[in-house]
Amino acid sequence: MTVASVEQGSVDMLNSLTEVRAVVTGGASGLGRAVAEYLVVHGGQVALLDLDVEQGVQAAALFGDLAIFQQCDVTSESDVSGAIASAVEEFGAINLAVNCAGVATAQRVVGQKQLHPLADFQRLLEINLVGSFLVSQAAANAMQQNEPYSADGERGVIVNTSSVAAFEGQIGQVAYAASKGGVAAMTLPLAREFAAFGVRVMTIAPSVFSTPMFDSLPDDVCVGLVADTPFPKRAGNPEEFAALVAHIYQNPMLNGEVIRLDGAQRMPPQSRK
Image 1 (cartoon, rainbow, N blue to C red):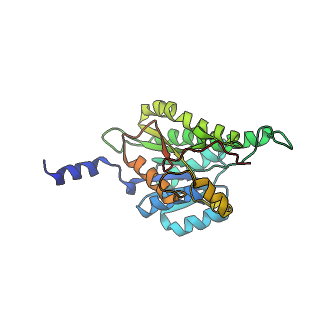
Image 2: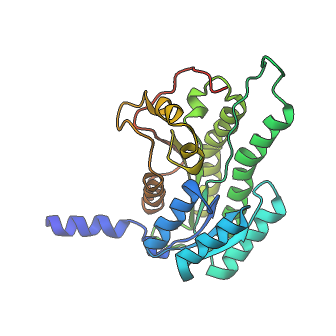
Image 3: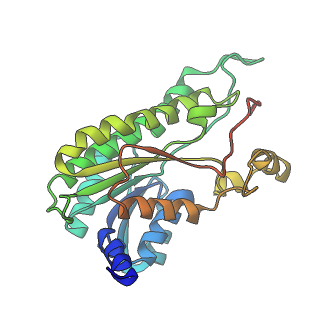
């Protein structure tokens, strides 16, 4: 067997991005928008799900005929099921779901002026954790109807977004760490269950990435957040996150695992509030 034939065989085993029919939550900005753009540039079709109508419509318009926008509250079961159904109707099927919708706050559990409000804790769990569950559930339900697109019988891929805070949460990140830890913990049981109908589940746990939220922080805060990153000593680029999502879709052996995308950063126990 020649080197050329080995290389061609390796390429043939990868799922083609031109066959992607995706839904991306949080698709109007940040990591979600980067994922949507990456997929569209490589020939995939994407439904952007977001609460921000103005940014969502603008993003879909920039991506042209390969993208649509659906307003969606990921904490609403009816919104999520409706958005998934609309994407299936538009594309004929979906075979990739990427959960990037999320929020972050920083509050001490026992602060100097008040205790951590329960409503704030519940809000993070609803958006970051329950939202990921609802989208995973609705997407898998739609994907099980797909005709297999590989010799392995694969019908779809779900990629959720956790955070390094799930493993090294800092002071003031109790709600955020709990929500992202839940996302990480769902990965294997979801992958085991959905394997019955050929749907893989993966999770990415990014460190600090250059999103609108990060870029709005003061320069000294941004520098401090990445100071203990061994290499590269900077915030991650959203395109690097998007490229990993694409590889996960393409590589059938990636399943049931959480991948840290962090430049070897391990967060110290410093305060964020």
